[in-house]
Image (spheres, rainbow, N blue to C red):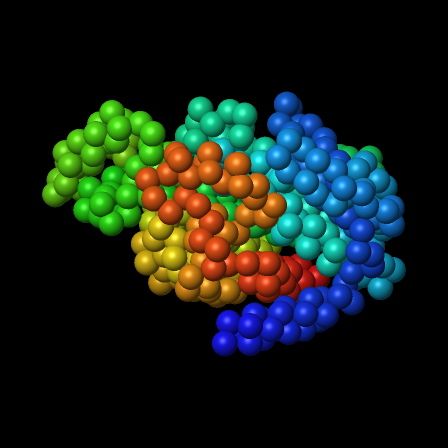
Length: 367
């Protein structure tokens, strides 16, 4: 039965990829890096150069390093390629999202992957709310950097841009779609649901028992406190434009957003309902880091322009990352309260199927 299910998923995946194949000119993937005010940005794009096996630490990818990008087909409506910015998860980098980036590049997109300031594999001193405030600006800055790049600027349309965000990158995507979040929503949620959603409420504290205790006490103090008596700084809304704005997006160039296992419970229902652009969600039913019923389902419940692109009942939080070396996976898992290791129920076929759905989502809304 398992083999039949796998074959069925593969057949569906190949059909989806075939549907978007007409948008791809070449199967080779180029990759190079640029900088914007000290922020590294990895560029992944179609190229006619031959790919080679390249190793970066524990990661191995098939790319044509620093190759020239391939212009868009003359039949493209704008004459240029569409741009998609990938926002990584907490303490992440471009490499764990490379499989998705390469799939998008093979489908004809140019992909830009900023290494978020203060929340990346080298520096995660601002991971969490401080990074959530600055991540959207990192994306806007990335678009500007691509628009200035001598090689890509003539080939890429930066007027209508897609964004994909995984985990904390989902905060980036939702903010850029126009949603707003508050610390009050986080505090109230964790005061009531800490043990149930412990992967989120005590995120990153797996090896820090003293900080776990401190965080628990802080949430316990807030339990049952009436909102009018809560500190004013917790009620400040961050992210999209307020109700007075005709367009809730902080950057009107963002035209479509795809999310994978996003942080969702921090967003106000009212702002989720104000989002106007298409938003697609990819859900992992066995996500123990960010329980879907508190996060993905919260977004779907209130958002009027959101759809489910894929929903895998047995997939875990980190199953979306590929390549994801075992040594890195174990190191990251040790910092989590639960659900840190890949589940094993979400393999290559499932990942290809989900990535194909993301490709088609952006083909539909950007091309």
